[in-house]
Length: 573
Image (cartoon, rainbow, N blue to C red; front, side, top):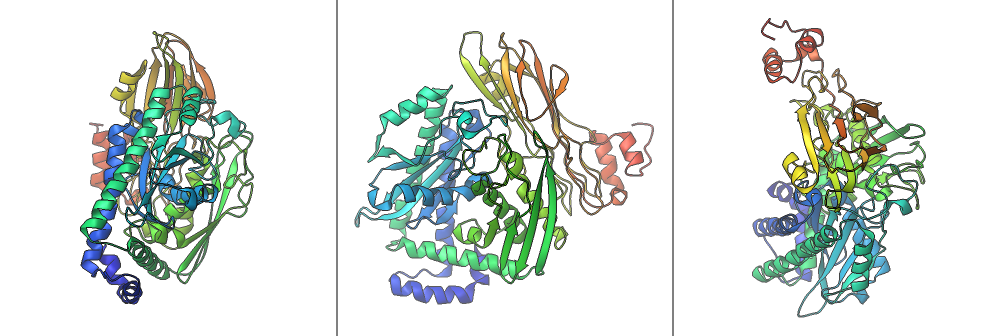
């Protein structure tokens, strides 16, 4: 925080005078920095409570969740350090949209608000967003909101896939609603959720985990405010947002002004799609425009604008100002627009269960555009994560739904180092271990390995993708849905770096679409060969010691070393 405080000292002094008129307590910069860190630590501890108490592997192992703290106006103030950019970027919109339906005046202590509506939530129906108003016990006024988001293990409808024709096929859609009123749960709503999901125990338990996180934020925030004798928390929040925005605006001003563009091709069903991206830098503002992007799809790969904006802002902020903690000030600096009813801004009832198929390409488009002006700050294309949902019944007749995220695509090479292998960029979630998958489902992981030569060659090599094979040991046929792309358009390299390997999917050894749904026979297998990632700079400039290390580790083959890198390989390989 000291960097932000120091760089915005003049503005901070001005703000401090304003704050003094509103609050007799004036925090010096050092105390303010400590307090800011404490607020972030509150969300971190709440996130830990959520993860530790979760029942489902998608949250407990893959960490597909986050927590945030908001001020009384609904502005994001602090977030957990871990969490997908989608949840971080969408939850402020979710809070404001819910308050437009359930007014602030109608809220009481211990009310819990909830929704999974894709257009005001996270862009897909599988994630639930929960919010808790935090009241001052003396004034009985709302002083803050706590927020949590998590990916539910099931939400009914089709299994999680890219193949739905509209949002109604994707599961139970919960409008903005009070899940609890003054601490008493809405039994009808909970019964409705239980009756519409395949895994009611895990699903309801995970919702309770989200609520535990909200209560943790409430308890810890009240403790910190008491410890620091803060009587005007709103003024503290205003200062955090103000200084954060000024810091990011200063970083934008340091970039060369101009308009920079890129195009990204993405696989579709009936036809492929193109994302057109324009990044305009003028003074202290940055505008990201997706004008000219393809129209919406008839399948579940559409990205609602709330999700498109979240990942676009994430991509821009990674380049512009990665060290400033995220909050409303850092997010609102960036303007984002996409044509109505395009694949990046579809209207209801468009299917959007696999919205990341398109949405994950928005930071790639931003990075490609900014590579024209600040190549030293971006990465080459990543192979992107993939998932595979398998639904069936075990030998005892119990339903299982397995979201298999045990390996993914490589991370794009960086301008000063190789990309990371099988890394969840841009989502930053984790993988579920083979042991957890096998212990919670009748599935067996027969193979899990890095794919040699899948990383794009370059002075800095792209990260490798992972291949895995899973066997259906349930004794009955199961249904399997793949969600992955980069099977026709491989990850691109930058500045002379080469492209990475494409993604492939197989059912019983037969190649199938990595975005399709199929029957997995008894004792049948599925295999996912995840995409590698793009390289950075000319492969001929790669350090000879790094090539030798890649050969020893099996990252590249002798043939690749000789033909692509121009390296003489000894007979030992």
